[in-house]
Length: 448
Image 1: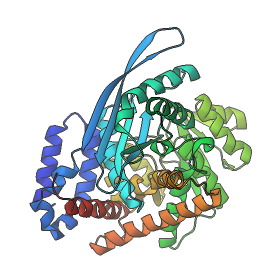
Image 2: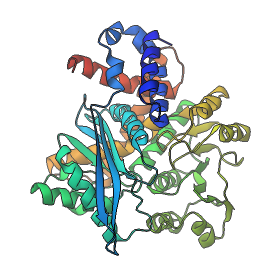
Image 3: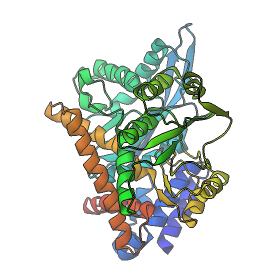
Image 4: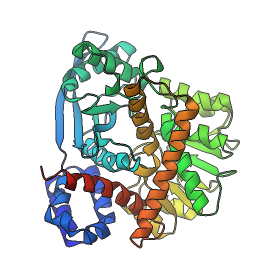
């Protein structure tokens, strides 16, 4: 590895010793771009890497809210505006009890390159809180969202930073946050949030976009291998919006999604989650936070408590779509033993570094989340475009833009890896393709 990269990594590890997720994300990207740094000595001369691994801005703030019994609670909120070289900061807001500064920083760092890959002018950011919406009433969630935005609103705007949803933040939460933003600012800046309701500037197929995009990307990779998605059996972890989108589009294209999972175990539906009733029930499960056992009870399927789907032997493709670091080395060994050929990350950094290395060493085609799940932020940026032009595109128009975008992301990743003699390495290719655009913009704008 390039000596300059090694020195930057040493500094990152030292300064962020309590932030393992962030360190892992930086290590993956910098290891991939070593040949680019070798080819561009001007990057080292300008010390570009030490700038790109440091957020431009990082806000931490308290969020005080009242529950339905009149008791006050205090949570912590964050917004990491990591890099705005190619456009306004853009990235989701996550409400989950395990959210911390390391997770927000790693997500913001990943978002830089993911957003760059879309080809759209958006920078990288991420935000969230350690607030858990599960089990809270609508009124409690509304009060929390209003308090969160009361702390954040000064630092966001259509040309500054445009938040979206993420885990624990759907259309309901975006609506409450936008309502509070509008109340505080006294202006109709509906381009400041994406993932909005259709009555006030939202885009069609936004809820499905991440899952749809993942399947479009998968189809391109299968095409590269002389294969097709038709008839493929897919194991998906998670059961939220992303998994729902994956299952909808995969079923439409002739694949069979036969596994879903949650924290409490997994469900096997040998017939596939393939009917309208089954697919729609996933939305009900998500809204009610029922857990996946509810699906097994409803449709008479086998539920495996306390187990993960990794290693089941009757699938062709694994798609982790739940959360970060859900696949460990022992899981990777089971995946290899299962004989599966394709492993496509959909949730952000779902695979621990040693597990990902093991999969790649055993000739499994691994695709990285920053490329596979870029469709979500891509459609968010399309929502921004519709807002700025006061237009509403049809679902077919948005879907066509999304499909073309994912094809381009796959091809750009494959071509970048090939350019530097790395073969069909989708991980390195995505990191290189995303980095090159941001690096060029940063160099052209000077050192600051």
